[in-house]
Length: 402
Image 1 (spheres, rainbow, N blue to C red):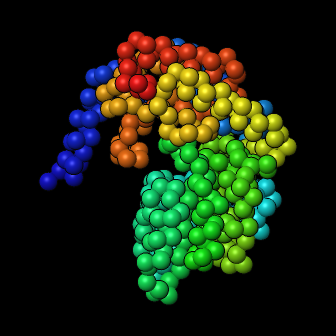
Image 2: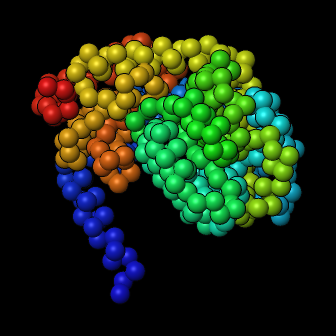
């Protein structure tokens, strides 16, 4: 049997998508003009689906830092840190992140995906149980699988359901890890952290928060949801990525446990993956310092998020959650209408993400926008105007409430 025959259904689905217009999962940015502008299909397009929350990817100081590291350290490390040793830049970035996060220890990874693979599989093992929010990112699920731990899912953002499942669990001598996200990547909603902390006090598990979409975004210091909620002491471990607010590539895990550094020798994704390139590490160092020194970026992002959220609500669009967030998801009734609306928006001059089952909660079809601190008021008003025009043209008649 042909090993790839199982992909026939995917091929047919992709063909149907392309038959409705452009390739919504294969759009090419021919040239980047700024954090919020690109040339796509020969047209200047507003970027509203890049997760470039701080708009830092074209920052002159970050670019200069990367160029300097490229010249001094070369193009790559050619191996893992366990095998080849660490560069001074790797240790410097870990120290910068630990300082920013106000944690004693930090380990950096080559990607955010590997950060979740490594942290889940390093913290939990076959004798342990991971309690996981049902809407968690795929990288978290994959890390749980790699760990070999027992996996128990609880209803999304439902601390009472977690409490019930913990109360029913049998004591088997293993550890218990509960995993939440600061901002959930598809719908843009936040975990009710205080509710989960109350459950933690009752049951005594260890708590990890994935701050991938909330790092740099939430809290008085920009450390994420736990910072915003004033509950950092109740969170045992944090994990996140460089590919959002930091504008680079990589990931991190951090904590205060005295054995935390030993995770380096227990995480296969860390041990057996080439370490991050010097240029990427150097740009991340410059970016994290900039985030610490420029809180106005967070304030601008919050204002921009509220502007887009309010504008979409005024259009009557059905949104993913009831509070403003840098992730603004528009719910659509079905796959064909979602694809049609995505194509119409792109032709009109705005790029957003298309999100379809099975990668979405409850099999929803979404058009997902991510707001940047670099967006101007004019950008956001134009995005709102184009969504309204596309709906009025009939591409998304069922998208608006009523």
